[in-house]
Image 1 (cartoon, protein in one colour):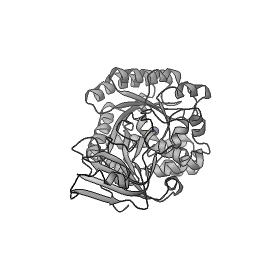
Image 2 (image 1 turned 180 degrees about the vertical axis):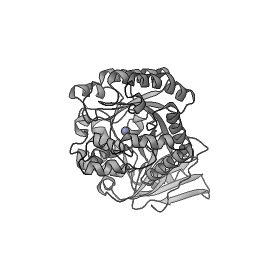
Image 3 (image 1 turned 60 degrees about the horizontal axis):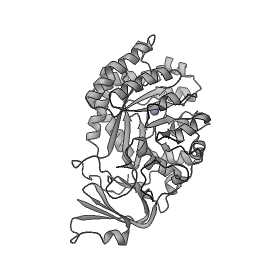
Image 4 (image 1 turned 90 degrees about the horizontal axis):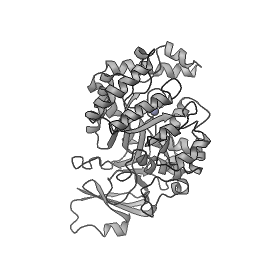
Length: 429
Ligand SMILES: [Zn+2]
């Protein structure tokens, strides 16, 4: 099947003029590779040509009968968003937390009232794999409706061998029902579950010696994540989990510096694909980050939802040359949003990122945070045809409008020939 998108008001290619596959840093984040009156030719799920409409239409083979042409007048066309940090495996919203927090309750008071992570834990442990998969599939659909075509999806509300495996199976099942791309991550080290409260080292042993080997053997995850934070897993336990992941040839990533500072040096030894949140990153760790290919993934929807006045220090990171990505952190406790455009809005208004920087962080650098930039994150021949179409004539509108979904179409290629383009752009959601 061949699809031709034509006459995009602005086509944001995100291609690098020199063909680099490194994450974008500093001033590079402001270059979106814009083509006016742009076109994209898609063949068998891959991008075949990108350029001005005249130029690309001229490359069509003779006899255009099997070409589906989509007129993108009045639209901005860009690579689908790469949401590189989500927690979609849960069963119910955490409304007790929400209301109690509004009323000023502390974390402990919320937990005593039946809220907090334990509420999600019992929901996931009791749910069937079928029900969990249905929840994940629903989330993926909502994300795609807002222009997301690649999603990193974590387990982490089961916290036992059985329920972490069940959560990853749910992600796998949901990903097969979706035409986008899903990158599964084991987050067994989210918090210490109640039954190991008095013996966290025993839980770390379970993760390292039982859960990680089984997950790796069944290829249920590509990454292992750790919530490295006060009240969760300290740096020493994080290193143990990272070491086990590396032994089983899984990539690593971490939630870190969300609530407190941490020394990133020992974690960087394991070459994490991404370090996420980074609200309290220390200035003396910036040169180390800037000289690595580890991406700092910022999650401002969590700050918003928790009612915080401080947001992740995007300017400091970008100005130091650190590769910055943006993601939703979609989860029931602190960021119940599937919307990357909303995250763009927060990045610009609260973190002083320029609209172009935010778009780069949500596409190309998001792909780098999953080490998928050879396939995702920019519109270039040979890459997966993952495309979002927005009702806008200027890219800055993507971050300007909020509380409304202006994504009017999308193309999701997925990973292989069994997943041909199957969501051609539609008339809107
Ligand atoms: Zn998270």
